[in-house]
Structure formats: structure tokens, C-alpha cells
Image 1 (cartoon, rainbow over the protein chains, first blue to last red):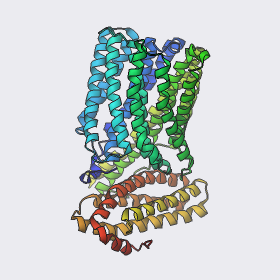
Image 2: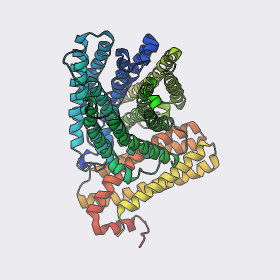
Image 3: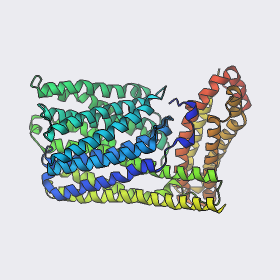
Image 4: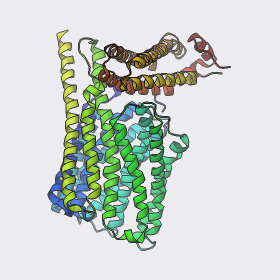
Amino acid sequence: MQVSRSSLSLEQAPPISVPFRFFITAPIFGLLAALLLLAYGPAILTNRWAPATLALTHLITLGFLGMIMCGAMMQMLPVLAGSPVPKVKPVATAVHSLLTIGTLALVSGFLSGITGLFHLALTALGLGFLIFIVAISMALIRIRTPNATIHGMRLAVASLATTVILGLTVGAGFSGMTSLSQLIPLTDIHLGWGILGWIGILVVGVAYQVVPMFQLTPEYPQKLTGPLNWVLFATLIIWAPLYLAWGGGQLPKWVPDTWILLPAVGYALFAGTTLWLQQKRRRRVSDITLLFWRTGMILIAACLLLWLTSFIPAAKNQPALPLLMGIWLLFGIATSVTNGMLYKIVPFLAWFHLQNRQVALMSMGKVKVPNMKELMPDRLAQRQLYAHLATLLLLTLAPFWPNPFTYIAGLSLGASCILLLLNILQAVRRYQQVNQALSDFESSR
Amino acid sequence: MPKITDVMSADHKRCDELFAKAEDAVSNGDWESGATAFRDFHDATEQHFSMEEAVLFPAVEQSTGMTSGPTQVMRMEHMQMRQLLADMDESVTEKNQEKYLGLSETLIMVMQQHNTKEEQIVYIMADQSLREKAADVLTQMGINQPQ
């Protein structure tokens, strides 16, 4: 990670409001997803193409995951790579509001079928992601000697661009704005790039930095970090035309389905390595983020096994399995990992901003800055972890026994998201109290 | 020729080990070995900071002509960490486990980011700008160089 020398300043971290608005919004969208589960009940988990199911999926992908990933990236680039996002305040405001409006419009569009809402959704999401991708790419391009994490971020952003373009295309097709001959294969390619590209490659790239950092594990072996990102990306590039060829009747389905085993094995290798490194960690204290990550890594292996079962003839026509796959990928892996990251990022940022201000004001000994665990007490994080794990278990059962598990999972998801929101908000409140004390100190001088 | 990057990065690892040992003992409520391990960690870290501040950073500043660049940021981060270390010291005296673990969680986040910056920017700058003087600088820091 070579950083340009002039950029090593502490002041380059964006204002705390930049990432926090994304982090606060995410659990609210998660709560909306829970309400959808309760409102629509078992019907929402019977067919992945049902409009309400698509609404639910996008509340999680755009509303929860997208918010956290976009917010965290804007924060992390200057900190991890010394390359700040240009015009970060207006960019964050535009991206956050456009993605919020776009997600709400898309979800209401799916639920109501009103074409105007799709127009609004596609415009807002297209514009929001365009601004995000351009701004973040400018920061990523400036890094002259990128390491594996930066390569991962670049490939992840390229995957996001692909996902968004495909999403806009199928969105226009779904709402009847244009006619598309291959709506179903294109939708699958959209979600393939979203999950295995944007989410997956970003998680892998970020893990290279944060897993050794948080738990003092050995570094990831370079034999893995060097090629993995590129292999994952390249297999997706080849998979897309194979899948379209199946859609057009030129190839049997097993060809793209077998091909996708390549990135799946790549991810399983990554998950196995991460669990192995975490096993060898030098920091032995229990850690909430570690537990969230372990959950995600175990579920990566489970997804690979689940994919393999889809080759068994008896499992082919079992509609619960694709739903379970979606639940494990989006909730079991992606939500676990991002949710766990918040328990490091949120208290650290709050501490970091307060501490910098304290030093700048030379108010050490006058105003006490709380440490990370005072900003985010373990017991609060642990309570939410349990709610999250319970939700994961209930959501795993729901595709097989939609009634009553859809309802119970909905309640559990709601509880988990409320707890996450409250945890973040109490850290924000603590931050504001101390920040106010620092302001009082400043004006009293 | 020994490289500053290698020698100083190895010292970071040594401090990490001591950090983990102290945290482990404190989290098990073993204040006797916890206090000793923390003392070892505190001393090793302070020694590392002093070597950098007294010898390495001035040498780098002199050879690059940059006095307000990365080395200055590193000094500020040392100050941040010293404050956390002082608070940890207090928590050891008070045998306040919760306080210690909250501070150690905070310290490790700062320390790891700081070490990464040093290993990937500052030490590389040092090796590039000091060249043959690197061995002298290591000797001045009191580091026995493997032949």
C-alpha cells in the first residue's frame, strides 16, 4: 500500500457525517425488509420472481448492503489508501439521497406495479451510482502503486458498474419500458455480478487489510491475494456470455452452472483461509466482529455445498433451494460481514474524530474522550449479534416451512435491525455529548 | 545490508506479541502476569517510539529535507498512542478490566494503522533516502545487526 506522501495527513478523513448517514440509514431499510416479511407473509418466500420478493431483495442489497458499502468505501479510501474521494461532502449528500429515494421508489414500484415509480427509481439509482462510481474511481485511479486491497476495490467498482447497467436494463424491461428478449438470464447475470462481483470482491479485498489488523492474525498468503481478485473477476466475465448462450438456447444449463463453480471455489478458498488465519490470531479476547465474520465465512462454504446439491436431479425442482441460496448469500454472508464491520468502524471513527479535536484543542485532562468500548459497549453489540444469528436460523427454515417461519423471521429481523440502529445511535449520541463538551471547552478559553 | 524496513517491522511484530500477551492475561483476570506483560509491552513500545523520534525521523528529515511531512504525522500518532498507553497504565493500577480492554481495543486500531503507514511509507522512504547511512542509523538506535 504505497500512499502518496503529501496525503498522509490526518485531516483527510472525511467529516464523520459522511459515513454515519449511510450507516444509520442501513438498519432502517433492514427494518422495512422485516415489515415486508410480516406484511406479505409466506407468499414472499415461495418464488424468487414474485414482485414482493424482488422488493425484499432490493431492500437488503441496495438499502442495507449498498448503504454500508458505499459509506464505508468513502471513509476507507483516505484512511487505508491515502486517497481521499474528491468533493466528498456534496458527493456523499447526493449519493446518499439519490440511493435512498431510488431504493424507496424501486421497492414501491415492485409492490404497486406503477410504471412512474420505476422511472423515478431507475433515474435516481442510475444517477446516484454514477456519481458514486465516478467519484470513487477518481480516488482509486490516483493510487499509483496499488496493493491487493486496492486492486480488489477497483474490480469491485467495475463489477458495481456492470451490476448497475444490467440492473437499469432489466428494470426497464421489468416495468415494460422496453421489451427484452432475455429478461430472466439478464436478471441472473445482474445478480451474479452484484453478489459475486461487487459484494464478494469488495469483501475479499477489504478482508486482506482488516482481518490481520483487527485480530493480529498472520497476513493472507500472497499466493492467494495476488491472483484471487483477478480470477474471480475474469470468471464472471466469461460466465456472463455462457449464461446468455443458455438463455438463447445455444448451450445446456449445466455449462454456465458448472463454470460458476470456479468463482465459488475461489470464494470457499478465501473463506477457509480467513477461518484458518483467525484460528491463528494472536489476540485471543472475544470479539463481536470476529463472530460476525466467522458466521459469514462458514456460510460461504455452506453456499458452495448448496450449489453442488443443485446438480443432484432430485434437488432440481425444489423451489426452496434457490431462495435459501439467496438468503445465505445476502443475509448469511454479506449482511453478517458488513454488520460486523460496523462494530469496528462506528466506534473507531467516533473516537478518532473526538480524539483529534481534543488534541487540536489541547484539552487533554479537561474533556475525557471515551474509548471504543465506551462508545460501543460489547453487551449491546452482543445482543444484536444474537438477534442476527436467530434471524439467520429462522430465515434458513423459512423457505421450507414459510408458515410460520416467515413471520417469526420477520419479527426477528425487525428486532435485529432495531438493535443495530439503537447501537449506532447511542454511539452517535455519546459522540455528540463529548463533541459538545469540547465545544464548550473551546468557547470557555 | 540490513534494511530499516525489515528491522523496524520486526520490532512492530515484537510489540504486537507483547500487546496480545498482556491483553490475554488481563481478559483472563490474571492481573499479576497482566501487569508484567503490560509493562513489557509499554516499555517496548516506548523504546520503539524513542528510537524513531530521536534517531530515525531526524535522519529521514535531514536526508529528504521534509520536516513537516509523514514523520510529523507519525509523531502526532505517537502522541495519540502515548495518551492511550498512559490511560492503560492507570487501568492496570486500578485493576479495571473493562477500562483496559476498551483502551486496548482502541489502541490496537490506531497502532495497526500507524504501523502500516510506517512500514509502507516512512521506512521505505528511510531506506531510499538514507541508503548506505542506514546501517549507521540502525547502530545509533542501538539495534544489533545480524551480519
